[in-house]
Image (cartoon, rainbow, N blue to C red; front, side, top):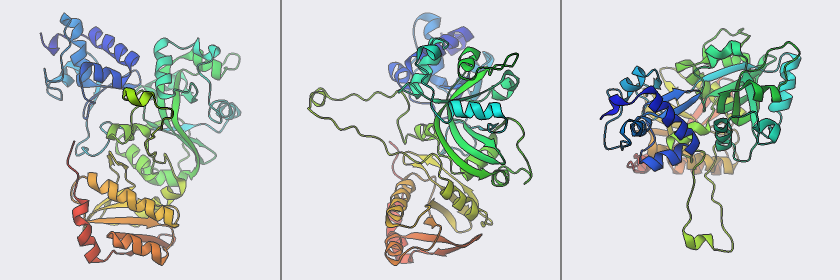
Length: 438
């Protein structure tokens, strides 16, 4: 029997097992790799499509299909899931170097009315200890497990939406980005972790007024940072009129969402995990037996990229506003997510922005550029480092030695480029060649 015999109930049982085990354990148990193109979107979460269908086959005749037993993709797995009523997200055209699924951008008014400001104080200014009895007893086992997967310390910041927003929130998932707005500014930026419907849990955090309506959809925040981005800046990125006031909840997708996320230099943990730059939640690392009995151990942590840096974001937005005949985007890889990838008349260029010019920042830019270029999609013709002001001679020589151009801000809307010597750039080209896939 093949995958055509899999039913909707078989898939739902498999999704529940996936939730219980967690992504990494589930994939390892059944011998599947993470999906790179097609993911099932169900109940606010994304699932590896081929792995789910292969394991769901176990409920047909007791035998799960392995990764080598059938092919996945648009011609096989996708039609089966669509027939069973599941939504499947696919890779964007030309998106092989980017995240394998579409990230949405929520714009959520959160600092206007007194009630919203109180909610902000209760669950954004401080984390909620969701494992405490009064919270935990309102959660289902699956919801509590999901929260612990993203927040192992048992606490998280939360926000949500009322039932009237159900249709808008239906496609929102872990890894999507939310902009919290109020008083003509984006006041904070967050990345969605666990998302589910649970009015009882919501009422425990945000008790409704007498006769008032409960919040319905609840989501935790994997990352959260305060900022002050004017509406005019956001509107320019999203293509809205400069006087747009963002009066209600918005869920933005597609290129417009990408323009906002990339323009603000938002780097989500989910995108880094999808690119292989950091380990996903729930990943278990095994130590050799002899290391477990040493008197002391060293905990190694993967380097963290900044979720959002307002100063660097403003610098990039200003610089990109000066570009003509050039497209600016970003790409994700095992090295992280670059700040700018330019494609124009002079070829392809990777640019890393820094908010300061001290040597430590310059060295950081150098290291990041040499890391990113190994994974770049296509041939890279130039590397550049972007700064808010000119560099000192010593720092300028450092970057030029490695063939890296220096771009600095001269005045509002005006930037100057100091190209690296041709000889240095030519010497470094062999170092810029893409690394071999694993």
